[in-house]
Length: 239
Length: 239
Image 1: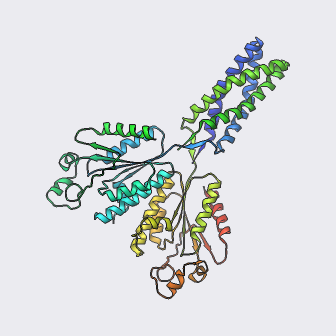
Image 2 (image 1 turned 120 degrees about the horizontal axis):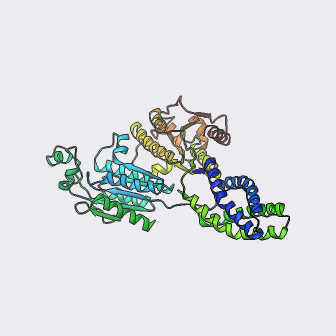
Image 3 (image 1 turned 30 degrees about the vertical axis):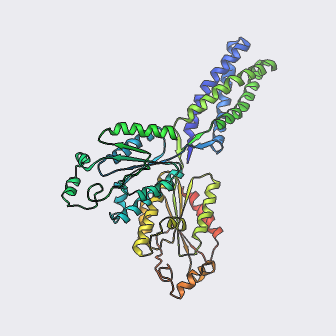
């Protein structure tokens, strides 16, 4: 919850007083033709009204009426490893920050780091994604934009999350292991190609493409900068 | 995020104008001794300033400066089944609602219903509690008061959650199966006493009392109404 600080109220009081007293002095001068009276009235008004205005502001800050919550949403970025999910999530977060919106980044790397025992079997991945989705939906209900970037390779858990949320935007960054490999500084795909690691979505494990994704981008034909713009355009049109 | 609605700004404009123009009329009368001039100035001021004030308000509503977030917290209610956790959580939620605070109830019944496959082994319970705690800590970081009621019988996971959070209040409702039984409309304890069900904390499974709990109440010697007051007193003193 946000409350106005006293300093904010004081600065707002001064900002208003300059605007308002200038108007008063002009009005009194127009009616009386006397510049001295106009200025005297202005000075007295300045002192009296700053005090009254300050308390009027504090009173209204405590009134809930008419403070409306801006609609929130869940932006769910999915795709094979190194498709650009985390980078896109961070780019979108910056846009929301510029708009002074509350947001929460949810990312495979940070969430998994907290829960090191989560495995990579289909069942474990699905439960993991469902739980993160539950978190995202609760954030959404509380007015916070959730920006999640997870491989989330199975339709089942992505659709479970969609059903929990009100405004759900699935953004699929479509890529191929051959293309994504160029961003892979860890030799992750090389090892998968050789069969040295299992459970790599797109190589040694499934990635199920969703027919329901609100936005799909072919990463071989576009750039993350363009994708970011498209997503923000969609967000602003819909919400 | 909250924004002022246009209706709020209009009502606030009128409320201020009545206050302010009355002051102006009095000031002009004091300086000129002419009641007619005072009223004419007042009327002109009313029209001109309502317009200016409205736009001044809209401008400030878009400024982030000085909008301060009220500190948030996680209230974690723990105890054996039927100790009164859910009821207390709901009672606390009502208090926060009265204070116009944003809060989120997290409850074993609703969260577990979403994840039916979570078991009751020590490992599974600990992971479940850690995940709910992660959710609570993210809510707290975003200014939402999390009110969680879970048996959460193990110190390990409760302390994990404490470390994730900034303002963590562990409320332990201390009870005994013999005493809690009277609130048990499902014959849960009877079955546990007979050894028919396993994993019942306090009977056929552990409940580890924490030495770190911020607040502990002996439910055999107090009432939930008194507990609620004590918790709210603690909250208001600390945050």
